[in-house]
Length: 234
Image 1: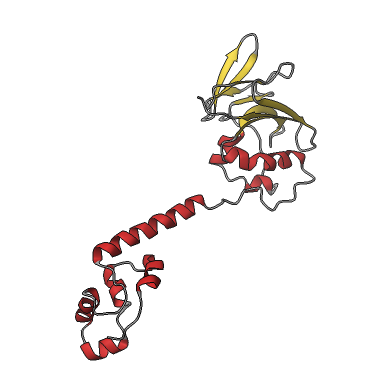
Image 2 (image 1 turned 90 degrees about the horizontal axis):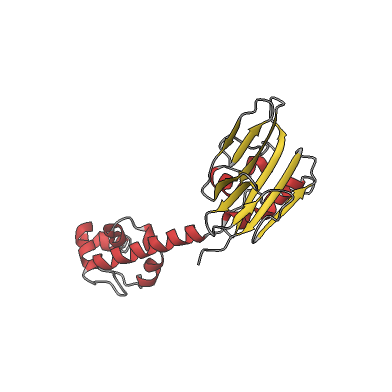
């Protein structure tokens, strides 16, 4: 057999071999096949070490291939994900610009955001509601919103929803917030991560680590954003 140092190059690309036999076959040369005329015998000679340089045993091959696959999976999991708002010029759209500014923080859990929206639906009916931005980001593709092909509007499945024409109303907990109705304080939202309460009454303080932003925008009749910097419960 012709000599060659296969150890390092094959280790670095070990995942390209589906089986140990494929790994051995890649080290068999045309000269080997000419003289031996038997691929199985050629494999056996490679496996027992009749080749200069490192040749992995079957067990070593399996272990290194598994390690390579785990490393690849880890890189894919840790690779930066492209934000739905990336590359969009939103300078003329204040609401979308504010959503884009918060997208990464909300996705990574450092910020929890509730959005109050009041506007008209496709039927011309006035609707309003509180939207858990993080939950919507997790369950929807937001690119059509940032491309202005769709408008973000409250739904009956959001934290709260009210149709001013039909008087249909709903209220739902989300994975991030629990609704706490209060006869004196009105609607409250408890963050499920740090248990802090957000008060959406415009005449009251929003609560610990929370801020209220009322936007001036031509995109909707009214938009108010409540940001809550989440802290893990001790």
